[in-house]
Length: 170
Image (tube, rainbow, N blue to C red):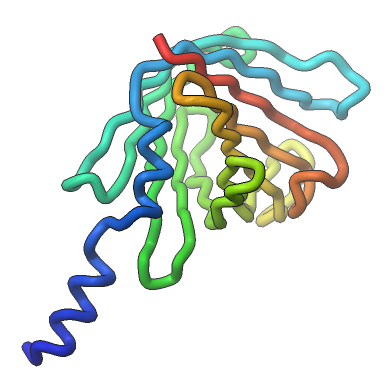
């Protein structure tokens, strides 16, 4: 392979400072969740669980393993978070036993508010809506606390928050 092409490939494949933002997610966490299923005027469904997040694939990605309760039933999930050098976007993928779909998003890091802000699409089988645009935000409060929030809109400040999952380091 041409040396110039090889250098380009290496730059795209080598984790950089953007990956260090993900470091604050790594660890073992006690998790509490609130989900507003019927709108912001209704009380949220609350649940709890644990999560373990670790670096995988030579510190290219952070993998999450989640275990808890949702609506009185066992809930398990897996997620992967990363940063793609080529597109200059953070990305996530999420799968769980509460759905047969794969949930994905991509976004940026806002240094002012210490948050990863993602655009995502989700399916809502209850309302028969496919590919609904929503926003997801990971707010990094400190090394020992972060939250994952979901909004019923493509913008995190519009409409209403549908979910808030708080991670406290064990």
